Length: 205
Length: 374
Image (tube, rainbow over the protein chains, first blue to last red):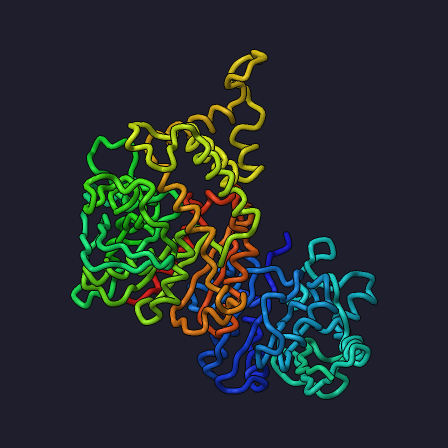
């Protein structure tokens, strides 16, 4: 039986991505975390950088966990866009390991760029060698980062680092910084093959 | 659960105010009474008070019973009591009957001291702003400077919102539930139909029916029936009544369907206990409320001096105060970088959902109120 690990639980297990995100967020700045889960990242940023944080979360249980954690949380579906937020009203808008589960992928990235002066997008790199091996073996990849079977996965738009680089180029998005990590370590050599989690700091061109 | 945690036997009190109150209309109310109930104990620092603002047909009797054999407790008894979401072991809770009401506060049915007759039609039209100003007088009377929280649903939510604008230093938290920053044309249209039902009732006598020893029951009854339709969702009515018949079809205009029986029962009950002049005034207060109006329709500007922290809650099936309207409030709060959380509760029961003890909804209120410092 497939366990029901959600995206947030994964990011909690691999907290190195929190540290990298914190490095990209300014002290005391205003941050919007989309698909914020139980608010763990926002709590981390609040405690380490005194950010003024707001989360967006659709799931009732996660929403309630945010409230219990003292995180400001707005219940809404990201697929509906960010019409409740003004243009350029946040210093940073974050989409952490949720991009691959979005149906309206282009729309959400454009909306993030509208609302945030900078945005942070992280996602599991489908080009990671372990995924490639499983595909070569004739099966859809299942791993700690992609813990779902093909038939029950929420991940509908998986991509590789090369795919996303091209996406940014085609959508006139500046890549300010990119970091790729595997098991907590930064990967600089052949990141699209050896990197498990891709992290981007972006800005509209 | 609610039985074990009941606040028990309660009794109302009356505060008299002899300082005149200038109303938004420009009229002056030389003196007035407010009837209220309190639950729990005010702490020494007077920092644990929570004000409950009622909606269209509500009153000061929020929780508990007046006697052990009362059939029903107060209207929000499922929320207020020891260890309930609004925990009276922690908070000192105040419920009042709004000005213009018909449950003891000054209104059309109360005696005008100047004439020794009921105010009737002469009672002024009061607004949400007037209510909040009069509620502030009540707090002064109780020597409470600051509210730990103000909470209200529907029209009550409008009052909670108004509190944060009118008295930003007196409100720590505002819980605005199933509400809106103003009414839509459709929403006001329902009010107009309800008022027309009352005003065109031959027993209305231009609002001075008391002098004729009668009440416009038919009008009030139809107004309430209409209201009940709009407070429920199509699905909720479907689930509650569907097309269920009372009996065999009789080919008549008597009660044939269960739904009709419900509406007639609710209408009759209401017509027997509520005052038509109050109903007219409550709906007008709803219509008139529009805090963004003087800011060119910009709610964010209207909220620019607000300091309170907010919890905004809406219900998915509520079409009279839809989630979209709550989101407008949330957006204006976000524009002002205020502390706000917003929950959109999945509920079947339409606007009525805010009064129901849905587990998730009550969990939200419980958890939020647990975090409120006193």
